[in-house]
Length: 272
View 1: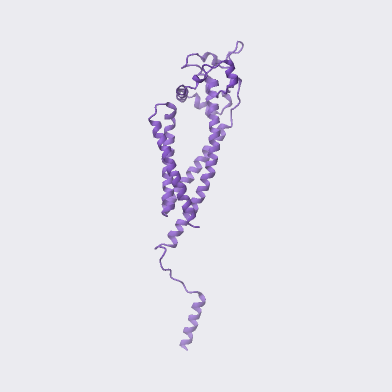
View 2: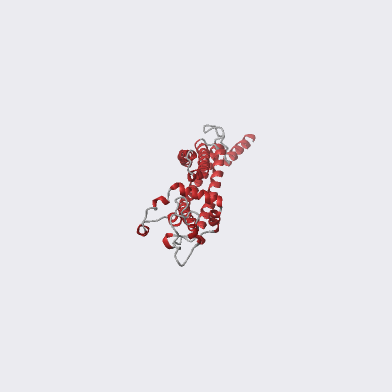
């Protein structure tokens, strides 16, 4: 039973060790691709892949070969990973809690989202990267041939609603500033509109919400693995303490108190 936790930790870390290889391979493959969106994700994926590889290797070696310092390093890294993931999950839940109210034509209101998200897309350099992603994905080409009836019958994404068509607020009586930013050229459209930024934020909010749910599941899994790892760490220390010279060493048996008393009485009788 004492070795069960070591075996479980060894097996789990061997599986995650294998799982880190596709993550690293995917990040290296993105480095060869010229698409801006994929290059944007390359560095986080590469860092994540190598972290999972190193942590899994330390846990596998420590559990299978009873290496105490490797298990200690593994548990310390796992604790940092759990704390980081917990903070990231809470941050994602706070960010995803605002926004989501759709307006006319499937558009969303920019002011409904969190200040942090709005500041991100208002950064010209960051928005230039996002705009390049939208252009490279050909998102608007899918709706360029739609009729007004198609907009009512088909499902339109927040980015398509905000970036690929004139704002719904552009009427004869109401003139939104986005109306002057709209241009029918395929590489312009409404990419610089506030409605386009709101569509991007709505997409990010939905993705962050899904990611937060996945993070909660991962947290439960990591906490369970960490608990098993603590048992494996105690087992490894017990093996090194109880069997310092190998499992077959001779153990000196200490006499009990009644045996010592009997010997003392016998010695006294021999004197008399």
